[in-house]
Amino acid sequence: MDFKNKKIGILGLGVAGKSAAKWLKKKGATIIPIDDGKKGHFLNYPVKSSRDISDKDLDLIDLIVVSPGIKPSHQLIKKAKKNSIPVVGELYLASSIWKGPLIGVTGTNGKTTTTLLTSHILSKLGVKNVVAGNISPPLFDLMDKNSDDTCAVLEISSFQLTYFPKTNLLDLKRPRFKAAVCLNVAPDHLDWHRDLKEYQEAKLKIFSFQNSNDFSVIGRGIEPFVKNLNSQTFFLKELVNSIKNEVLNLTVDNRLECYDLSSWLEKYKGKHNLDNLISAIICARSLSSEKEAIEKAFIDFQLPEHRLEFVQQIDGVSFINDSKATNIHALKAAINALKNNIILIAGGRGKGEDFNELIEFLKELNSKRPIIKAAIFIGEEAKALFNLFKDELTLCKIVNGGDGNLVMKEAVKLAFSLAKHGDKVLLSPACASFDLYNSYKQRGKAFKKAVMQLRRQK
Image (cartoon, rainbow, N blue to C red; front, side, top):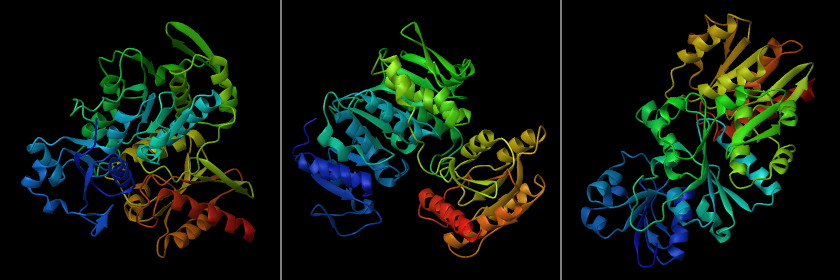
């Protein structure tokens, strides 16, 4: 599509929206910045509120590009669709422009690890690639690397996939994912999506942008909802269950390939980490047939920070930072990976999930063996979590009052006082961080700081 002299509305001036606007302006488009929370100018254009955009204004707009996080119920999006103005997400637009192969990774949990691992393997294979999308930076920031032989490995959120239209708009090239992954779908972002069904439909939309030469990776529990794919399809549950003697058996193009996973299994526990690895192997395999090189490429990969990250051991007590666990599904994965002797620190700002699901999960596990010895709850959901868990766990405490650093310091101190040699203090909040912290990263750093302070005091 030639953007010269096109009038393009940019709805939402976050990082992604600004990136799209800057690139489009360079291509000769006239930008109309729209943001209900900002005033002033951007790129020398006046920033408008959506309320200031009339039907007459819409008639002059060729395309509206939406930033992640803007809900489909937004008044301007409804008005645009009513007036037949095309609406796309910034990542959809960037993907439609990208010249090289695309690999897309989505799912409730594990997206970042799988995306980074895929990029790591491709780099070891000598395949030029960039990482972008939900993981940042926006793909528009990397357009100077846009070439036929450079793969874009994209972490894609449900927010972004919501604005991947299934029908062609204007004369945009339809994005196509050489490999597409949906790792899992569990309740999350229900404060944004209308319900779980809408959230799931957004995630599974990724497979609509493939053909028979592409690879699709289907996560656990979503098999019944994925139908009529014409790509090569791989089911994670089947692949994990087929592993024998730490060897993965993968059938590609009707040929069996065997991958030695022993180096990975030695470092990383939990089926979720296996799901991430297998997905990354398949993504890399979609661009390379060098089986032996792929097998060697993941040996030196390190998991990203704040994901079951071992921090320190003090007097035989291990401290583990899983601050990225912002929903129940992620906390369950952490518990399954650590298995027992857990002192849990959880809580924060809820995301519309039903915590009774976690109670049922713990009842089932605790019927076999004690898993969580004690729990400490922080943040806005602390009282609600305490009331739910107090009858299921022997010991529950609430730590609140003060800023995020102080709350975490007291929570870590209390957790250590309750722990014995061989126990694991696990920060796995199952909640967003925005009540006490700017991000899950800041929350994880507060945990690590508190642990190191505790160590210096010993």
